[in-house]
Image 1 (cartoon, helix red, strand yellow):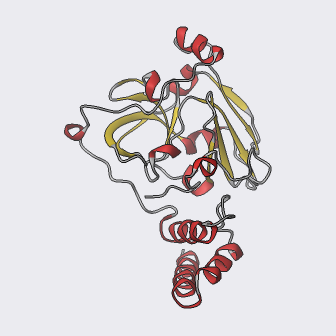
Image 2 (cartoon, helix red, strand yellow):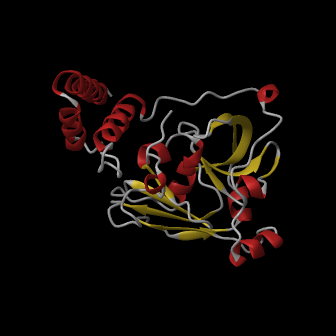
Image 3 (tube, rainbow, N blue to C red):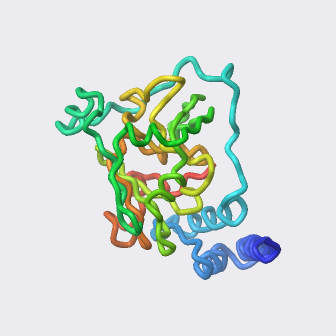
Length: 253
């Protein structure tokens, strides 16, 4: 433990000193050396993205927790951003209350599998009352019920070389998170909201909840989860659709 603390202290000091004295470029080089480079590190804002992600990971990779609220603080209105997917596949699943839906989990896992909604509900549930902050300026507090993503990763036996978890929904807004975020105790696969089933507008049948990041990282309408060792060959190579539409891959708050 003392070795990990010393390493974290060294990295924190190195990133801060490099950014303050030698410039962002030197800080980015330290981040690269220790594998703290986000997948969208290229382009005009790449150095800043790297410094933000690297600093957050050094300071808050596992120990920081998003604030949790009481039931009395649950918002009376929970805004919906966008409509559910209009594809025939999704609409047919919705019409049948997702009885035929399966979540595929594959990639760098020892036991690839697919799970029905009933399979997931049979696993020990976890609930959290957390704040969802939208990048557009609105927010709400809700109770989310599901299973920790780490539980699923253990069931399929994530392989040691897996570094990123990629989420594919029924719409185009795919995304990914690193293993530190995936293993965080508050990162949830939610199938329930405010004591009931997850509504279609909020991502039914299953959505990701990443309460330590802005709302667009909490991908809705999940269909498949894939573990990879590199994001370079996944879709646009930037870890998410977000950089293509003007947002950062890492959305830590």
